[in-house]
Length: 588
Image 1 (spheres, rainbow, N blue to C red):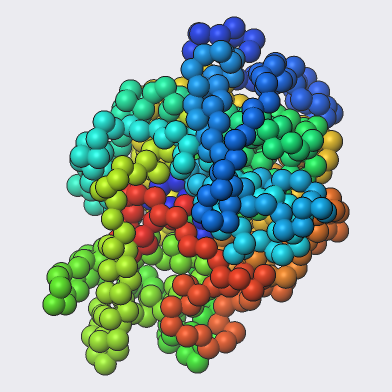
Image 2: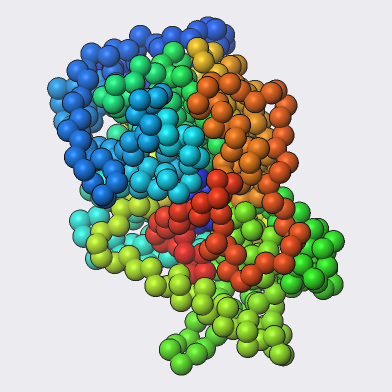
């Protein structure tokens, strides 16, 4: 998923990073699936949409989309869909669509639905950016369609607070990369509880109808609305969960699904032993981030000072020394405009942010070198101060007080209704500390993203959430893509997802950052070929042509100049709130 270091979820990318009931409808239609051995065996063999899902979506008339020109190059539309698919004549919610029409309409294959992750990322904005990151061959043959999930972006928004003022009062207690001191933890938990309460009261009814299953049903309805016989889908980070949900709920209704940067849906839900664990204990995003950081230390040391600015001595030990000093005393930087503080959590959060980039190694080590220079003084301190201040001011320039920004609420509504979370918010300090022992630095950074989801705090439920099975045999194959050094959606989840889904193929990549498409010719071409022709890469394919750290001298600010394998500059990452002053926030 594309998730912020301190909130869930990313194919956002400074990387990317997951599933309750009422009595208003018949139990047979509303209750989440109970998985038994017999049901699992039957599901693995079947390649047809279940009777329950057919009943929910097929009885609805295909919506008529009244497209109009927007953003000069696109078409937009809005449509009302049932808030509850078991009650199609009841309350509705509005969802928004945007499409970029195929350049070659005569040879058009159909529509390519895209989702950037999050959860909470805007698919309409992502589709609008398609010319910047999709290959020409894909743009020629597909209408690129983005559907903002219910509650998100241009769709009718979930709002957990009555005003920006009320929202700001709550979020001010959470506006750190992650809480580290005892006082910060107490303040953070109190605010998270108020947040969960707001979404469970003021946020209703939409906050109780935003599970990934509902979005999959909406996408199925929109597939019909655009006139496609079968769905073609490309999802990143959390968007891979949406793709896998659709594949299992509608296994005979797609021609191609690509899931890049995978979430294992069982870990997202909290199935079996995962029930009642925090999200990072299930997904182990922090393990992936720590693995990447350790590899960066190793490669920096091997590359030497010519290519890595932090190679002198032992990079791992030097990084630990920086964090020890920041734990003891935050770094204070002053200039003529003000005083700025960099905490331990800020530094770790910024590191995690940079791990999302193709240029993870260079950017992380440059930041470490700059902070070290400021701590130690000397000739290098002045240029280091300028570099760090530039990053701080860029992050601070992103305002969020007006207008009302619901991105954190939208993100949380999906995480909290999809998953089985611990009961008490007060249990998070111990649970995140345990994760930090297993994955130093990042166990807390990832561990606090779902504290507002504590089941005694977040009490609104989506009675029609989907809990599995996730091993249904599909009529067409699914392409799952994972890269070794992903700091958000751990590569192991791509492996386990491929083993779970019978008719799937795993494509591995050695690229850095979050997700693989656009980072190397091999992975990009393999994904394009599958989308265009349905042809899968050979079993066991590992792409090894993506750029690697410390192989060349690079100009400053490389993280802002990353080009995709298509030769186009990648679109900027959307920043949900609240966030670290150094990271600026991420979306997965």
